[in-house]
Image (cartoon, rainbow, N blue to C red):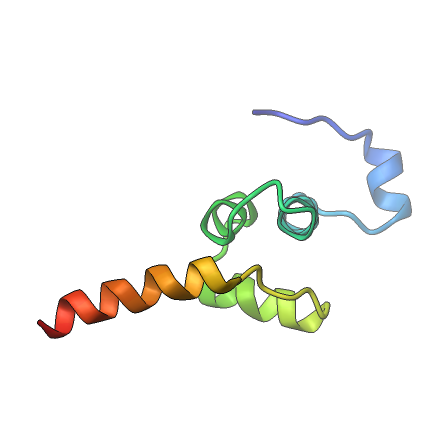
Length: 80
């Protein structure tokens, strides 16, 4: 996918291609339109680095009881 932003518009707000990717990924994750893994890929960062960016902006992870139960089941299967 290619998104074009006029140079003058990007310069006026200090927007580089890398920052544009990161900001888009953060917004998609915050609005629950992308998973953590998907958003990290869009941003071009590893999951740990993307999580660090989320923390800087005080964007919480989406992790509910169902996610916990799935993780718990995976761990229980590995122990057996």
